[in-house]
Image (cartoon, rainbow, N blue to C red; front, top):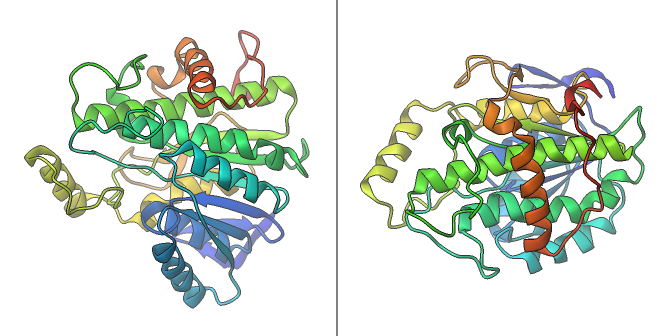
Length: 325
């Protein structure tokens, strides 16, 4: 990657020149995803804004173009809670040519009651993890195409501080037991981090020129869920506290923008704010739950079974250290 350009400075970050690179950002119409798409477009990348609501996506693209008149943007529909929609998206997007950066950002947060997707998954797990698992697997050929060991493609998976509270992966993936919104959300974000680490190990072991990095925004005020839903008192209070005390989406997105563009990152890192909830992004040591190789390997295989999509990456040998690639 080329050095940062003066016009590519964004939210206190020197974003390296991304001209000639193609990025896909899920959930790019609002919050962290919008800010990531804006930063990548400002740095010169061609950005596919993968969104569930095309009208909102087009409006977001117009806002980016107002800020970056030369922005190269495509707005494409995908509903991560539906495997058929994900398959349609990856088939069409894969025909557009190589993908250099994939930011798995979209997600839902704190659904007030257990909801089951059309594919039979708990909504948080089905959207935040399984949808992105299928999307990443479907785009893997495009990520490999054009990438080299010297200039690998990059997959960024967005987790959350909430994943730390999960402690251990629920192998029922949220379908049984007592439901609470925060537990379901935390479990899905733990799964996101486990998948990202396993993806990096497997790509490294298979010699694929793709690196996988995990990012979290700290305590950031985003809008993953419609505020008009029938949330309980606890969920409403949590959202209100986040809106009042959390950092802006622009500040929160700095971690995933760094994960997507910093050439010093080689794969397997967790990037987050320096002071956990806030601060300049930097690599940090992942909690033990996010490094559990047994859970990660199990989740990978179970995700293949549930989605019917196999990325074709064999397990990494024991002792593989993603950050040491």
